[in-house]
Length: 178
Image (cartoon, rainbow, N blue to C red; front, side):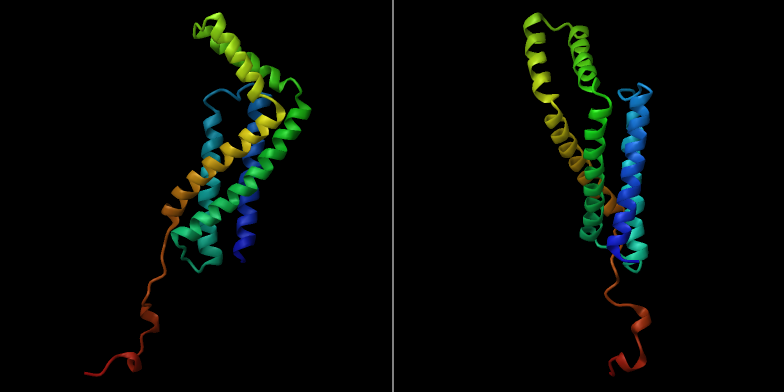
């Protein structure tokens, strides 16, 4: 199977699973619960399995660290595109999403005992960083950052270099005479 096909398949699977899980968490009100870390584990697992699949299905059982990183990063790019589309669609379907984010931030500031001046400054920052464009940019940066980090780790796990000398290629005619 071609390397690009494996990357597209596993990048797509990882993106769809991650996006579906995120939407389920949001729909059930669990998007800020510890369950959100399961989504992080799902992305890591998808990249790990995808990199193993690249190694076994398109590289003859071998993959260098660089090839493994590149495969993981390309899968991350697919995941990022899907995450951006899901964010844009989510903001359209749930127009109250930004208000909920701002409300949660205000509640957190009040619970932490911030004074009025700090709360006003925090509100201004929230208004700046919770516009639809800012949220999409944040999704791109965060998804690419963690995907790159996970790709570095999965490349190290999947790394298996092809031996320089393969025993199956050695014949009596290649053996030096003494």
